[in-house]
Length: 397
Image (cartoon, rainbow, N blue to C red; front, side, top):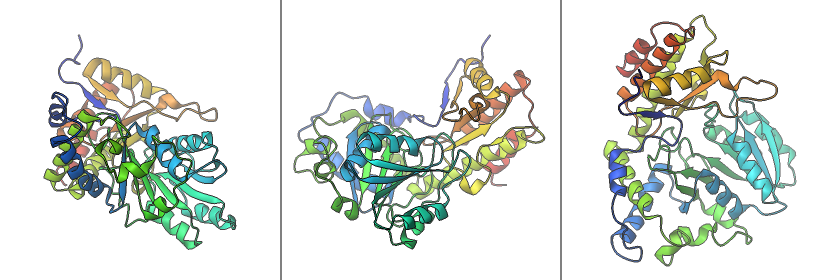
């Protein structure tokens, strides 16, 4: 017998659950891509997209995943021989740096490990040592999906400002946009990359690069036709938005997702929902971890993402638990990602819970209940009262 029949729940940190409204908006015949409703919709949608990013700057939309958005951002401002400083807190900033290196960029990486955020003092020291200003860009992630760390973007900006360094500040918000508070303009971010499949609740396939006037002025001549953000951000003709044929159905889905964000009360209300639900998950993990090895990967709640939680369960039980809850209860948890190294070959000790985008209280409480059932079925040691602790957070107690 299996209890997995019925609606399954993909609780991985992206792709997130796509709302029925988004899927239904996409379930139509292909629209006219030359004039009419689609063209009008996209022009009207751009300000709403920029409002979620909290920017008055520009946005370029790409038919690409997050890796494509990384390359687009890099190609527009970095060329062969330029230098970038990469602030690594897990997996994804380092991958962005790797893409830059493949483009001929000299990459310097500061490694902060898998359980700590960026230390602004180290950033300040590295930039102070760059007295001839060879570093053209500082790259980091807002949230590293692998480790669930949340980096303090205003503090990093302050470190750059403290030494008067002219480098562009480039931030990956692929996991965090529409989940964790992010203020592009107020926090002094020059370039931000995002994608459709997480907080924006739309299937994978759209990448976004937001940029300000400083970044536009730093644009390089070597950028390829396809990745060039110039025509995409200020098109003379509709096709220039996308470098060719528009991703019609993704755009229809994104329009509906942005409608839902607006109806919820705007991105501030969305942030508040994610904050409450994340705290419910953390309360459950704290209860499970009483007198056993289980704990959040990121110890300080101030350094944790509201979009994803990485949990260390120990003894290879992350793998066992993930297989049990999926096969027996219809819940898919995130794999450990980048947590298995030669120095610490314990990747199977982890699992991740995605709580991003189209997620509510009963989804989170249901997932936590199934995880607890899985630990009971597998005789994995854990503390009592986790679901009750999460319920109290949901109730505002």
